[in-house]
Image 1 (cartoon, each protein chain N blue to C red):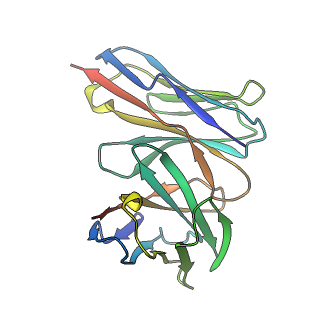
Image 2: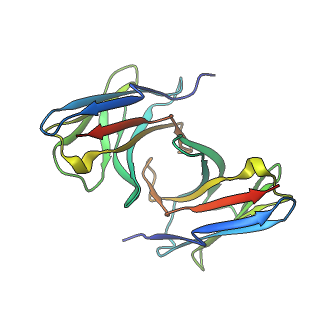
Length: 111
Length: 112
């Protein structure tokens, strides 16, 4: 069974731009969650989508948004990028028992 | 507000040693607890999931225990190998959702 895939793997953007990251969950998983990982703050929960609906949201500004499609694939968008948004963005999918399976991440660098 | 703490932050041991990694959490009303491994620059690999009704889970050389009343979990690694070198993360499931609250991790180095 294929694992969670994330595209692109690496991104370089400049301040003020926006970016869209994509996540394809494991087949059959309906829940997709997004996390931000930085050296200073560690892993922080962004939001979770289940059956195309946002089920949970972390404490991030409205510049961070997401959506989920009918095939469970999810996208995350960050608008008006700031230097502090440089991070590894991780996506996880889970089945009904909520065991989280993570993808390899997208490394975003904001210059 | 749930907080998860992992001690120590770093650990270096010789190959073959048995070791214990610690995780503590402030709110005992957890849904589940999951241990992960992360290699540098990579994503997270799930090691063990313990549901709130369980006391422990085992997979190969790994054993994880959960004591909700004291707010603690331990990950026991038997007969450590250099390939076990990685950062180990503990995460608490806050409810019947996919949201996890992570500790800062323990970076393990196993020397040949």
